[in-house]
Structures are given as C-alpha cells and as structure tokens.
Length: 185
Image (cartoon, rainbow, N blue to C red):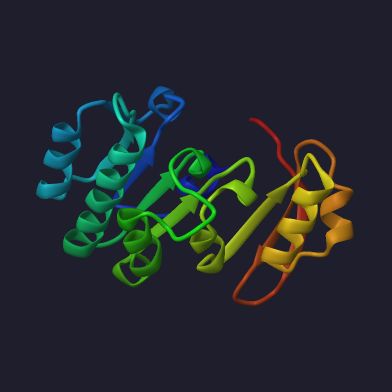
C-alpha cells in the first residue's frame, strides 16, 4: 500500500526508515547502512530513493534519520519519508525529539510522511494527531479496534469487521471514508 502511495507522489527524494531491510530490495532504492552515507545524500540534496537500514542503536539512529530528512526538506524541498514500525523507536508518550520536529514541522517544508505501525496503541500519538490520511487495516483485538476508532474517527463497527487485506481510508481533511482491499500486482 505505502509503496503505491509513494509511487503516486512526485517526490524529488524518498527516504525510508527500513528497519526490516525490505524497501532496499525494491527496484530503484539504494540501500544505506552508514549514517555518514545518508548524511552525504542529505547535505548535497541528491534526488533518489534511499532505504536506510539501521546497524546500531535503533533509537539513536532513528533520531538522526529524522533530523536528516528534516534537513533535506528544509533546504531542498519536497521529499517523502516512510517510517516503518514506529512502535520500535517511539513510545505512547511525547514524540522523541528528532521525530517530533519532523512530524510537527515537516509538512510546511514539503515533507510527506508515511508512518507505519502494526499497533498504534504502542506508538507515538503525534503521528496520528497530525495525519492528513489514515489507512486502517484489520485490528487484532477489540482494544486495538477501540483505539483506532477513537484516534481516527472511523466507525468502530467498520474497523471491527475488516477482513485480512481490507482497509478503510479516511481523508482527515475532508472526512471522506472509503474502503477497499489490498491487491498485489
């Protein structure tokens, strides 16, 4: 789903927090494992698609990654950031510093964010609060259903009845809700 959304956007650069080392295997993405290499891309404003695979302290690397993306957007304009598995690097409380800056101030700098979490109740609430779109897939438990309904404004009953690969999309700006099923091509 996210790959398709990123493809639809016309981004000068795409930066992926690729903790599972999956995006790096997609055509057109350059795998980066050293922060110095990511920093070189960011400082020079290079266009392209970059999958950053953390090799050390995930939380410290995530903070530096977020700051780097913010720098890119601030100085070179439109870009996208895909942030996989936020619950691994954030908490339910206040957003960590670099991520907080990126999620609160990135949009006005042309940075489109695609934060992803399997369980949003374990991840940072700032991402949900600043979202312009929600894609909600089947929730595993009733408490997850309740949490996502409360945070997104999507009807609890519709979330509860989602089947595997089905999702609801809500445009947070217009309130329009649509549903569909994820297909792989």
